[in-house]
Image (cartoon, rainbow, N blue to C red):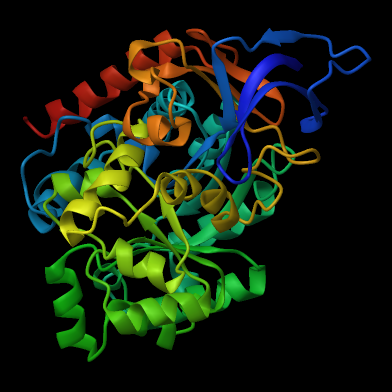
Length: 430
């Protein structure tokens, strides 16, 4: 495809105007002011469009789309134990696949090209992701409350199967990570075993960490250290790690994140909705901790429109810190794009440069809220809407364009998801 006369966002988050950008064999093959020679098969008129790297949703639970609007107005511990866990006990592979398919459609609609997910029935999730054409780092959620041997757990066997059959599938679009749900839902023996497995397999790790004050303080009382220090002591951070939330992380934790190369995934919408608090983002940025952005699941956010999280990420920590200079538009855009890719181990993505993967989105700039175009990065963070996305491309393949999906039967996914949710709610007598 050849994008003609299009503005684009460069690696420094500056706008380069009226360019030609050619995509061939899944990569960006040309950028320039002059139209390149050759057959590009398809052209895209870039007038009133902005081309930018696609977004990465670095922490999600895609199948929790089934719970949208179900577990509401509760603190995290009651939200989990009274609503989420009983609902999840009734999930099946087909219900998870349907919800994952619909989640992929929602993410593509709002410009997300890759996501990092932890959940169950991962073989069904993998099938849905591969069909959608998206990129994903997928991990099997692990919760175990007894000191059972890791290799005796069904999760271990799921991980072995996932690594053998799905790691690198879809020409590298799908990667398999390992997962610890959290400090309070696992035992030290299991955490240590997963850390060893991750090192042996050469995988990344995905974990919830210090999401609530209760979780954080109870860990300190139980272990004599913070959740971050606890995981580090068991070797979990010896592999590249995505640590979701980190709302109550302490100064010593930030130093640990920096030293171990942990990526912190901020989830501002979910953290506000569950009243979990506000991550110390200004201090993380000051220290140089890598930050990425995630929506969390639809049960604690209600949508997968990462541009809402981008907006809050750009504003929230100014208000909390009392400093309007913290979290620049470039900081926010970096967290939503290239930092997420780097956290996934995809260093050939997230930047519009020749040779990089063509994971791109085109936004409509000819809308009232994008005028005047005084500062486009500011407009993207503070004014743009998820519905402004007109095209979503992964590895050079258009997956969404102007209301049409090329890989997903959205009507079918909607109907199936509704049916499965209704079935489960009827079993719960809700």
